[in-house]
Image (cartoon, rainbow, N blue to C red; front, side):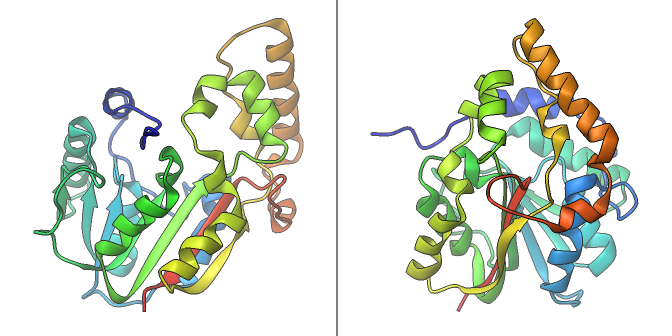
Length: 259
């Protein structure tokens, strides 16, 4: 049987243990790619402070903080990392936000006691699993009928794949590249009869994705330095981010309504 998860809980415990708090997403501090995602998401979610929103794999909670302050949503998070949940609690306390946090495993734990939510989303989560259909199904199980599902993954196809395979092969191995092919999303969209509100590549080309260098050889450092020059030269110019494709865009985003 193929392993469902491509990362280990200990890996995420280590990642979240290093996070500096408070961590909050705002329109002003958003990174280059996130700045492109925010208006797309904002166009497709309702302005209703009575709604409940759940982030899956939510540590440390910066997106939830954004939704809480901008839309006054009731915020919830689900994460299987105990350290990640502790960091979220600390983060929300520092930001003076009320949040409900579930330390659960979306694949292996019984989630039948959880409420159903108006909006369920994950941004950078489903690509860490081998079975795309299964992990999407678990998202939908927590979503109300008529609710909004938001799924986002980084895109390592096209130009990114050979570069990352050279500079950061261990990191690349933690990702299921088939989840980054938009054609594969049509399968679960049809199976679960989702109404597609938005589904496309976004964010433009992001040379900052090539900062990681796991083996510091001269050739690898030269490649990383080249993309650093590209980033300095025009990586922050928003005009270029209007052009998107599977072959160079930094992100794949889907927004759906559950029938």
